[in-house]
Structure formats: C-alpha cells, structure tokens
Image 1 (cartoon, one colour):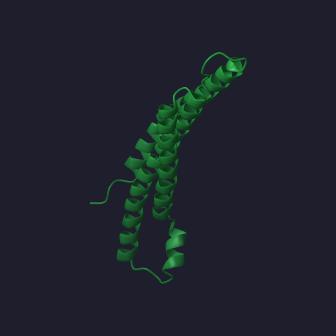
Image 2 (cartoon, helix red, strand yellow):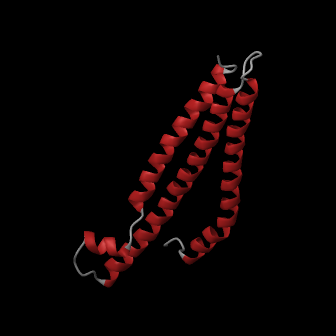
Image 3 (cartoon, rainbow, N blue to C red):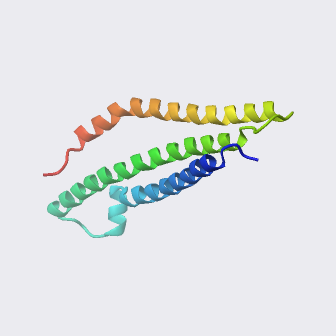
Length: 144
C-alpha cells in the first residue's frame, strides 16, 4: 500500500518525462557541436578565406545554440533525478503501524536526501561554471 499514490505517480511520471527530455536535449546539443577537423572531413575541399570565415561564424553560432541545448539537458537531468528521488520516497513512506515502518522511513528519507544532495551538487557546480560561461561568451562574440 502506498500512502500518497497520486503524488507518487505524478512525480515519477514527471521524472520520466524530464529524463527523456534530457536525452532529447543532449541529442540536439551533440548535433550542433563539431570541430574544424569534422568540417574538413565532411567537406573535403580547400576553402577560400570567405568560406572559412563563414564556416567559423556558423560553427560559433551552432556552438552557442548547442550550449543552450546542453544547459537544458543538464537541468532536465537534475530535475528528473530529484523527481525520481521524491517519487520513490513517496512510495516508500509507510502507511499504518507495522514492524516495517522504521526501515521504510529510513529508505524514504535516504532516497529523498540523495535527491537533495544531487540538486545541491548541481547548483554548486552551476555557480562555479558561471564565470567560465561568461568568459566563453566574451571570447566568442556573436557574429554581426
């Protein structure tokens, strides 16, 4: 028996949606991230200076868009993990009196605490990376 079946199903469904969205965002990000070597491999001819410059600007713009998809993948991943932890925690909450209440409470608290730690770890890393993201934007200005 589950104490909060509606909320458990809601958070587990949301976790599944977020984790699938994470995969989709990662797929979109990867499609836009490529190196100069890959361009040369795809288009094996000698480029004029204008073509090289146009490809460089396109690569920077694609990298900018890819970074947004990557950011979305990061957020959906961490949201999915936290929702998964909350959903599992809701399933584990004991209902009524039983000799199994203590282990179920410990399991529920542990999984939710793990989700909170995951979220804190992500926010900490995001804050640390904020300066690096700013420096990248300055080093790669938007082409005019």
